Image (cartoon, rainbow, N blue to C red; front, top):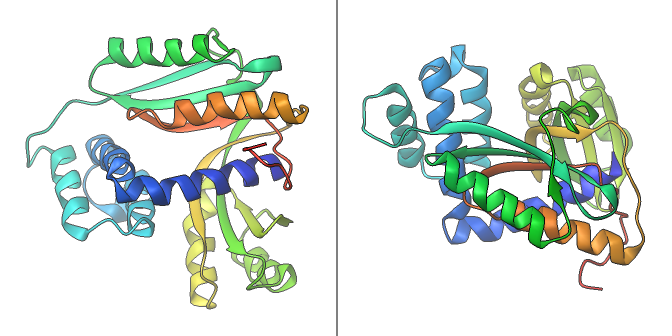
Length: 247
């Protein structure tokens, strides 16, 4: 899962920058709103909402913003109607890309996503063309310079994690989605501070390219991820730990 770990690290660093200009908060508010609409405003009985709120808190979103987003979802406050959409396609050299979006304008988002693919060496495919390559996993990252893999492994597996491995400067704990919160809480209780925590799509197998091919494919993935309506981009691109995106 090293390819995922590297992309997750890139996304996390970019997310910290996005938070400063409000883009990340906007995406998180959409997810919280939809989660509350789908399953109600009580975190205890709505796992999707709990996960969304957890991610928002990890991004230091103010409590008032979270509460307003929940109220918009439950109808207590007015707000836009959001639609969940997924797009599947291929990037340069056949890299698989799966895009999840939340939008208040289906036509706009579809046109934008198609344009990004077409202008960056990719193409959209039919539903189901790449989704079978991915499964949902809970991913929790820890600083490998601060903690040892053995220490993380002991607590994580005891709490129900599936696997622990080190990729570059990150120790990555993977869980089944339903065990994500339990493992995260157990790790926090044991004194381990995470650098990232999310439930996302992970490729079962990855594809490796040369540096130039990796750079082109990653550029497409990052442009998609940067779109305001896009919540998550998953790819089976293997990004080496020592890869320099700037060349």
